[in-house]
Length: 226
Length: 407
Image (cartoon, rainbow over all chains, first blue to last red; front, side, top):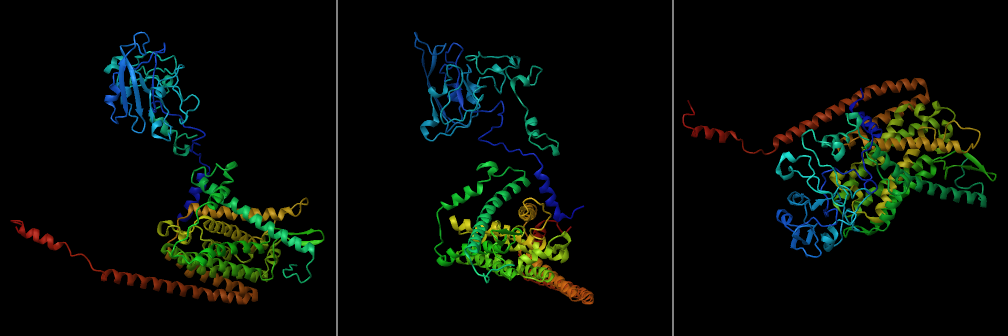
């Protein structure tokens, strides 16, 4: 065997032939996990009506106190949402938001959901406060893109309210049931399964943490890094 | 061969050739330093499972240029306690030897341009090796004065370390060079290279026995203050070492000097021990092959330096000094004696070899004695140290208070 002094030489030269795990970040991005919490969107129904009914449950549940909502009665001849009331003012301050997703849990109509976009760096405080103008999805059902946000191709998909940590309506009976209508036919994915047979990871794109972590380990150590 | 003082007259052709050689050598050295810094960063990142610089230019090859431009535009700071003149002078003192040593390195063979026989090296003075030794001593001044003139304690400590280290390893380095001189009977680098030509077995590595080569390699690494001998820049203890207070262009000069020294010294090793530009050539482009051989051999050493940096941890300072004074210098001295004796006659060689054995044993014994004495002193010192009051007193008082403790 080599004397210990030369062990370092062996280790270092072996590293030369190991695969690299670095992602060239600004050029390329790692795929984002399906449960990632990014910046919010306010969804709309297929007929273009807003889902928000101005109930302020999201604002009440928010631990960071970053949501400000004021509801108002729908104008009778030109209703904004299908119900009695609608979100007249809706503001989220992203200097305070901790992306806990409790607002998404609380929303009774799946009006607010989170996209996977977390790479936004505004340069003044006014830009940090998103109002309805920025939050409501466009006519194509896609989130609106601000100039300071880093959206890539296909990244505006998957913003629908398909994912809830708790069972829908608090009952395990409803597992796998889509409880909401699609929004403008865009971005709707099958609901995430629980621990039953209805689970379909292929359709939902869900990858277990164990698999993700294993792929980061080099082959020599039993993983399968690229 | 060489005519450094132009005793045979100086015409316009010679003058132009000399100027072109100087400019070419300077440009070559600058570009190779740029590439060396990039090379070192790339290789070390390879060895650490990283990617390394890859933004500026293809494969990040222009990274050094970008860093240089950045440093150029940085604010130039000088500590209030600094000795202004010496502080400004020191970076140039560090850079100049690195540049000048390269002038005596034979980069290629001999070519004929316009009826002039041109050696592919800037100058070939008859005392080239002495020039090398003198300049490597001058390099100490750059380091020492930089630390001293900064008027700050960490640079001072760093420079004291650095100069002590450089001076002690210079002895071993010089002694191993003397072995080469004994073999080639000349101080001129061109002659040293010519003597080694035509066969690998003629290279000084083998002619002097591997030992001077190894000593030279280690001593040079210490001279260059490259890992594992980079005590003077020990970040954990000394911030940045002697150049802590330097910023902007002056810092860039130190940086440049460090890497230029690495290249120059690798070239010197190749010249002294590995036949310089010697190697098999082909008929077409006859002048090119020696240059390629020279560059290839130098590159091997440069890679080696980076590899050593990646693999070995830094030495402790007393270990460094012990290694230099108590191992390298006696070893190179003894080896030099043996080589000199063998040159005289075989009988002398055997005699000196036999004389070396008891000397070596004596040296070992003296090291042993000194170590034991040092340990004894340390023990005494330890015993003399005041100690906190023993805790047993407290325990006893507790026992006495406990009812029925005696039973």
